[in-house]
Amino acid sequence: MAVGTTTRRLHHGRDMIGRKEPGADGGAVGRFHALLSLHTADRWQALRLSLAALGWVALVAVSLAWNLGQAVDHRNDLALQTARSFFQLLVLTRRWNADHGGVYVPVTPDTQPNPYLDGPQRDVRVAPDLTLTKINPAYMTRQLDELATNGPGVQFHITSLDPIRPANAPEPWEAAALRRFATGVDEVWESPRQEGERYRYMAPLYAERPCLACHEDEHVGDVRGGISITLPELAPLPLRALLLSHGLVAAAGLALILVTGRMLGRAHHRLRREALFDALTGIPNRRFFIDQLTAELRYDSLPLVVVMGDIDYFKNFNDAFGHQAGDEALRSVAGVLRDAVRRSGDFYARYGGEEFVVILPQTSLEAALRIAESIRRGVADLRLPHPRSPFGVVTMSLGVAVQTECGCDGDALVRTADQSLYDAKAAGRNQVAVRCGTRRTGMTDAPAQGAQLAGVAR
Ligand SMILES: Nc1nc2c(ncn2[C@@H]2O[C@H](COP(=O)(O)OP(=O)(O)OP(=O)(O)O)[C@@H](O)[C@H]2O)c(=O)[nH]1
Picture 1 (cartoon, rainbow, N blue to C red):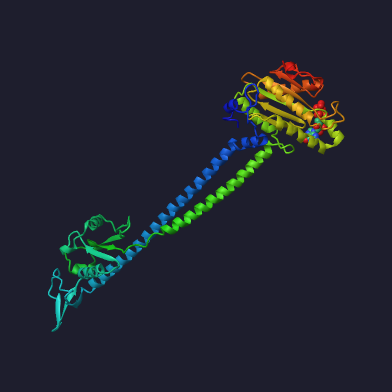
Picture 2: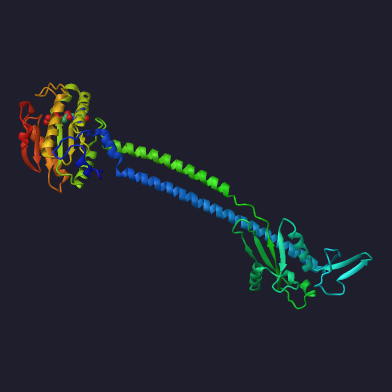
């Protein structure tokens, strides 16, 4: 809690012998609230919030990547099914043709007799101006291929590693696929990897029984080549929609984390404040005091002073004026502490009941006694009437304990301050007593009797 404040104290507020530097106002309770908000727990809270936000963004990013992958897979699956269907349709058409031993069509400028087809019945003249020529499956496929090439849709290419017609030679991708078919692979495909690329599919053509009528040297099941299919450009991925939806989800989640985090942070801060500040007087409570003293001891803020103050005859005051008046008196006394303990780094708290406590790090005994005395005088100067006190007004006794050596024990320091307070009470109240370490070094006389504070403390 006090990290980074120890060195600063040497330069700000009051110096080592307790002189107050100009402008070292201290800010009292506000200062302690600032101390609170700098607490490590708050930093953890911020770290946790950042981690939650990072985790959420990472989660949304993973979801985006997964959805994108799914969209790509879905598009490729669809393309594969389309290409397969198209290939099967071609195979069926070829089988129909082969089952009929080829089909005859009129010879036209675009459909000339097939030079790679032998046999006496290749061309049949059925009328003086009509000659029919036989179209076998390969010629039919090639003609369809040429028709498709001129169209905007699916394109395909019949080819083999050893084509009868040289123009049917495979391109490199087709040749590689044909070589794989020879090893038993049933189909190959390639998805587009960048804009402008097309989905490609290729499957082998196997020799079937009707084929053997023309291809006597082949056997049923032999790979006779293959047909490669190139699909038109696939539907674009829903990238924009995915980015937009995930961006919105990420932003909504971040906003929720931020808002919830802030609400939790505020609730946490309020709870901490309630846990560390006294509800009646609004100043730090005993728990905050213990935290603060522990921090000062950790940083060896020597000489370290603890001052304990206790309102005199407070039971009588309550009895005389009632508890509410007693509460009001406690609030007024807290105000005196607020005014008297102003140096940045000094600390005061309500220890419990009508007891108050002050921590003065790096403070000389002389300066500490001066502050204790100003508190005592401040309480008396409140002039709160107290008919059941010999002083006639509400007063306070204070005990000072000074720790000058390292390795201090907080409990011992508080105990010593308490013993000093007991000394002050025993000596008649409304005065300041001091002990250094566990040794009793002196005691003030009641200022009402005119004793000099510094002289008594020696
Ligand atoms: N009004 C009010 N009284 C409180 C509060 N806390 C403690 N007290 C009272 O403070 C009184 C303390 O009494 P004692 O411990 O006997 O001490 P004292 O009467 O001040 O006597 P000396 O300390 O010996 O001078 C008790 O009557 C408590 O009820 C509080 O929050 N409000």
